[in-house]
Amino acid sequence: MDGLTVVERVPGPALRPYVTVLCAYRERYARPVTRLEAAMPGAVLIFGFGAPMEVGGARFTSFTGGLSDRYTATRVSAPTEGVEAILTPFGARRLYGVPMRELTNLIVPAGDLLAGWAERLGQAERWADRLALAEAMLTERILDGPDVRREVDWAWARLLESGGALGAGALAAELGWSHRHLVARFHDEVGLAPKAAARVIRFGRAYAMVRSGVPIARAAAACGYYDQAHMNRDFRLMCGETPGQIFPRPQAGAAADSVA
Image 1: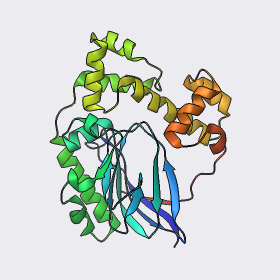
Image 2: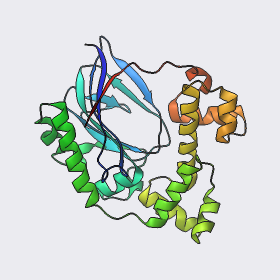
Image 3: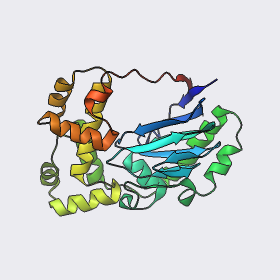
Image 4: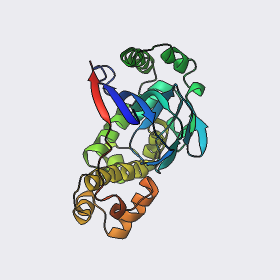
């Protein structure tokens, strides 16, 4: 059947703070499909078992990267399937064991950081088995990864709670840190500076509101954009379109199931 089919698995309690989405997917289309993937406050990990996908102008079968403050163009031109995980910044930090600044706005082959994982997952024939194995591998590696500084964890949670409205100065003052120290710690453990991270979080909130049918002016006011031009600039950078171009937009019709 042509189209996108997705089977999701809810991560177990140990993995839930670090992985927000874990799914298996299959894509098959009559003609090539190009998408503009919006920036989000997380990192994408894909293990592919079919034809390569074009990501940011390069071809990958399995790939990952860090947080990004811009959109990424992808193109599927042949049948493919795989396993996808969306990692929180700290999930990515613990999984890869490198400072997240080294992966910001980059797409790299997954094997560079997780050698042999695609081969192991590809040996499982059933989707449920692939997802169970992926969860086990992610849980073991992430829980064995470097600890995240509790101050950065707290500051990230505050940014999320505020919808990106909290300034870096306020965060630094509450922590008793200098602005420079806060930025350095964010670059290491999140990959983006606090101001850039807040911008992505705010965009994500506005993007979801506009796509759900909330009037653009109301979404702009709720998310703290001071004028339409300001909102348009962020949307062009982070999803490649203006709010007017995506409102209203029907949701993609993917077949979704759950795996325990």
